[in-house]
Image: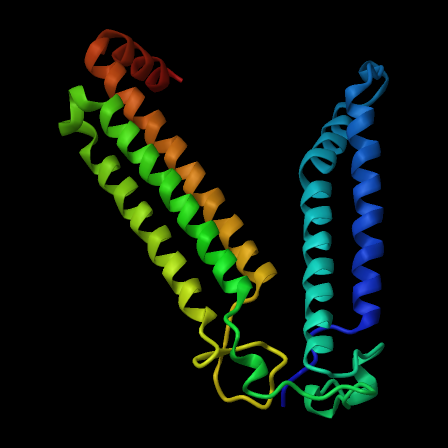
Length: 246
């Protein structure tokens, strides 16, 4: 059975949650910018308030907006294929194949589905742009630490590997533009593989990009530490002694 991913009610719920959490986050963030009398607040309460305001709320708000846009684009695909957009999934037993054709529409035929997916192209181009950025960072990394490559060569190789991964990631999305090999998730009449759609792909890219940035920053920091340890070994030895004493 091909399940219905979203209905109109889901879209409304995600929109309300996204707006509410965004407003709450904006209010909390504004309060943090004010000169509050912190001494009148308990340390535990103020710390909890800061954590919720700067970590949990923005993450929840971002997630709700992602769900809203994903549901919006899914319902648009239903309309594109001439299917009735359900208000409640349960009205059709949560079965995509039970959705009737909307009045005055027909299900897309093979000729109409022959166009390449713009969403797949967009995801591929985003991945390749990141790959290009990582390639520039890799070249800069080798130039910056060219005087001690024997000590940080491993980090440079990791940068090259990450660049290649992003390049391959782009080709993974780019091949999904082919309508003869991949289909939209609402095209239940086709036996082809389901392509990754825009919002789902962007989520994956954002997560991997965050990992890439953290990795790049850590590699640079560790390389700087190695550089400093070779230029000023006495300082590093002192830091290590202080750590051992603690």
